[in-house]
Amino acid sequence: MIKFDEFGPEKIFEVYNPRANMHGFVVIDNLNLGVSKGGIRMTPTVSIEEVSKLARTMTWKNAMADIPFGGAKAGIIADDRQISKEKKKELIETFAKAIKPICPSLYIAGPDMNTSEIEMGWFAKANGNKKSCTGKPKEMGGLPHELGSTGFGVHHAVLIAAKYKKIDIKNSSFVVEGFGNVGWFVCKYLTMKGAKLVGVSDSKGSIYNKDGINFERLCNIKDHTGSVINYDDAEKHSSSDIIKLKADILVTAAIPDLIKADDVNNINAKIIVEGSNIPMTPDIEEALYRKNILVVPDFIANAGGVISSYVETINGTPEKMFKIVEQKIAKNVDLVLINSLKKKIKPRDAALEIAQSRVRKACKI
Ligand code: NAD
Image 1 (cartoon, protein in one colour):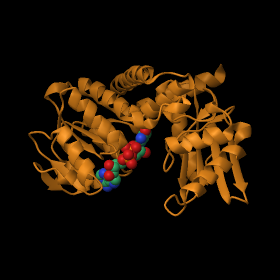
Image 2 (cartoon, rainbow, N blue to C red):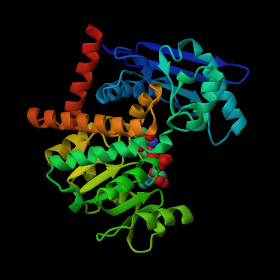
Image 3 (cartoon, rainbow, N blue to C red):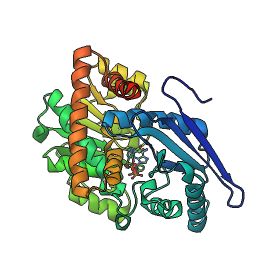
């Protein structure tokens, strides 16, 4: 069931092309702050309900990031692993043409699950307007997510959170769940700042060395063997054990629901920064808050990707993008943590208050 409330969803579009057997939708949650923005996911099970929840998260994420976008999300029903590249291209192209009446006037697309810069290139060409999506290849004036904007932003969220916990980043240790696009860049930038990487995981397992893991050697091993667990000089653990490893900072950067209610007493970190989406429920965040563990919520910490999308719409360079991601993430995380302290509420509640008040204020204007 789709839930409607004072914020939206404002518009729901469902499109079907019988010739291509393309079935997709766009949910525009809220347009108060500007044209709506959110990625297109392609999965066999994607539904209007799922997309409408994700569109709401985009409303808060864009408002919190302080960029002139409303919230939206799109879906195309297809099994990415079962179809050929040609079929995928046809689905993306027919979808781009079908939603042309609203794109980019009301909705700007972007990459999400199973869509990346290649698909965004196909989308923009079929739509006929480069402004119809972001995350396009460089040659088309795009700023692909592969530049690492999200991980770069997550590392800035860590730096601000560390200040609040009075942790000197140069004397700190950190572990990262996931070594993909987000996790890899978090490891790179935090290591550059002098923090010690002591643990990392991927789908095959976790590794831990309290004396530190060499980032470059780790990258080499991951590239050549396919997994971080083949790093020689470290203890081996299961993937899910990453949350129990001893470190000042835990960054999540892979799966949803990583931290379960039973894990609350087993967490060693003083700070958790949510690079991944929904790594735990708000109830678990509340329990951690009561244990004085600082959790920086996903929709603030991992907004680097959507901030990069905004910079792409104003034709910014990668240099400009990194600068704006840094400024916005640092300022917004700071604002949320000040409010959380002042009001004695957990950071997610403080962030939601700010995002909602920005959306309401824009409505009045
Ligand atoms: P990715 O596919 O590049 O990397 C995912 C990594 O997680 C891989 O290293 C994979 O081996 C690992 N992994 C899979 N199962 C695991 C498990 N059980 N335990 C530990 N590691 C596991 O994905 P990504 O782009 O880095 O995204 C990671 C998370 O961040 C997702 O939740 C995504 O929604 C979120 N996110 C990504 C972006 C972005 O710009 N890439 C933006 C916002 C949010």
